[in-house]
Amino acid sequence: MASLSLSLKSAIGFSGNVASGLHYTPCGKFVVFPLGSVVVLRSLSSKKQFFLDAGIDKKVSCVAISNDGSFLATGHETPAAFKAEIVVWDLKKAMEDYSNDVALSEECVLHVLSQHHKRVQALDFSCDAQYLTSLGGQDDNDIVVWNVSSGEAICGSPASSDFSYCIKWLNKRNDRFVTCGNFHVRVWQVCTSTPKLHPIDVSMGSIRRKCICIFSS
Image 1 (cartoon, rainbow, N blue to C red):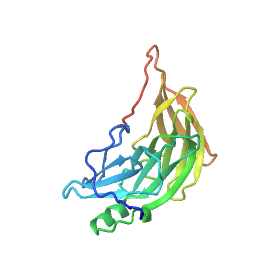
Image 2: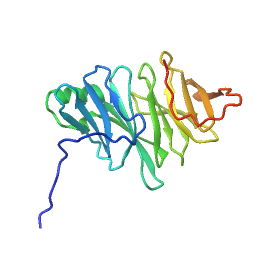
Image 3: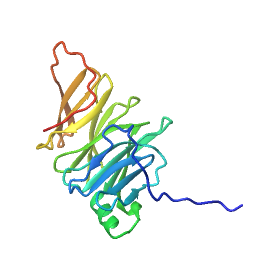
């Protein structure tokens, strides 16, 4: 019996169990959201969809877009204790391919990065899109700072003695970002020449909270 090959043409709704998974592109013309192991690029005007598939059969666990709209990063998770991938995409090319009806999403992949075990919890680009930070899940809980152009890991550190949920660069500095999690908030100074990460714990006094998200104005 001949095997049947199916291709995904459209999707209704989005995978809402991914925290902060729905993003508008900075140009305001598209929304980006995860759907299983792929990412959907959907036009707000035509409602047409373009699927970004890196050939990684692992669920997308987090999504980030650079401030200038040049790059998209997706983190994945694996059910076994193996390395979980991060895919860095050329988002501008993906939007151009969409406009030209060219469905070659693998040509939009810039880097496939592997450092974290089992799950990538959160991702964020620096304000100038020079760096990407990644935060591992509960079985990892490490921070890695990546060079976006080369795909090389610059430096890393354990995020905290307790589980961390979120990571966010400051809006106007490419040398500082913030993490938060179970009963802690930390500000990190990035020294790329050393290279090292230097954490400063935010004093929360008697407040005991599980911090699960960060916003930088």
